[in-house]
Image (cartoon, rainbow, N blue to C red):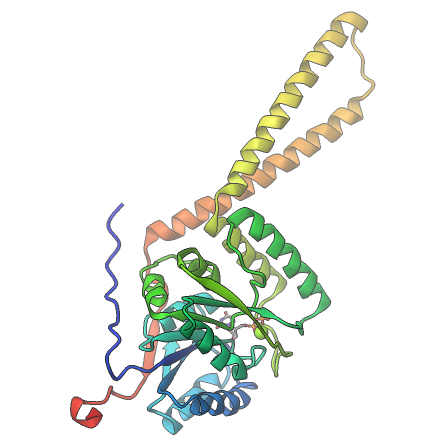
Length: 332
Ligand code: UDP
Ligand code: MG
C-alpha cells in the first residue's frame, strides 16, 4: 500500500488561542442566532483567547449567509469553512480539526442540544491532565425510541469494540492538541470522531453534562442514517462481528453434519420418509437467513475497503472565511 501523505502538524504558535470550538452546521438557520448569542457569551467569559470554527456541511438554507454575517461581526475569533456539498457531520468535524490552532479542541452540535455553558468544565477537565473528555447527558431530551435504540447500540458497541463511552451520542467533547494532531493524521472516510479519538487517548475521562431539546429545526439523522452510523461504529473499529459470524458458521455446519448423519441412519433403518419436510424447510430458511446476514456483513467490510483504497479527497471546500493571522508587529 502506498504510504499515506504526511500531515504537517499545525504548530501551536505563541499567538494561538487557548480553546478552539469546532461546530458542524447543516441546515441550521433556525438555531444559529440563538447559538451565536449563547456561545460567544460563554467564550468571552472564559477570559482567554479562543476561536470558533464553523464548518458548513453544504447547507441549502440560509446558514451560509448567517455564518458569513457572524464572521463579519467577530472576524478575530470566527472562522468559517464552507463545504461545497454535504459530506457528513464527522467529515465536517475532521475538516475543522485540520484547522484548529488552539491548545484544546471542543466539539459541539449547532442545535444547542449541548449547552455551550458546559464548555468551561470541559476545559477544566483537560487542564486537570486528561487528553480526552467525553460526556454523559444527565437527562436526555430525545424521543423514547432514540433513547432506547441508542442504549441498545451503546451496549452492543461496548462489547464489540472495547471502546468505553457511556454515552456515544453526545458530541460535546474536548480533545487536547496532541490528540487533535493524531486525528489529523487519520485519513478514513467513514468514521466516528469520539470513538476514533478514544482509541488514541492516553488518559480519557467522562463528565456529566446537561442536555436540552433541539432548539429549533429538526434532526438531520433519519432512521436510515442512524443505522449507517452504527454500522460505521461497529465495522469501522472492530472485526469481532466477522469472528462471531465464522464461529456461528462453524457451529451450524457441525449441527447440519450431525443432522445429515441422523437422517442417513434413519433412511436405512426405517426406510424413506417424507414427514418432517416442513421442519427441514424451516431449518433451510433459517440457514439462508444467516447466510444472507453474513454476506451483508462481509459487504460492509468490503465496501469500506473499497472507499479507503480509492483515496479520494474526503471533502471539497468552496471557501474559507478567516481573518489573516496577526502580523508579528501587531502582536507585540
Ligand atoms: N450535521 C452535519 N452534517 C450532516 C448532518 C448533521 O454537519 O449531514 C450537523 C448538524 O448541523 C448538527 C450536528 O451535525 O450540528 C448534529 O446533527 P443533529 O442535531 O441533526 O443530530 P441528532 O442530535 O439528531 O443526533
Ligand atoms: Mg441534535
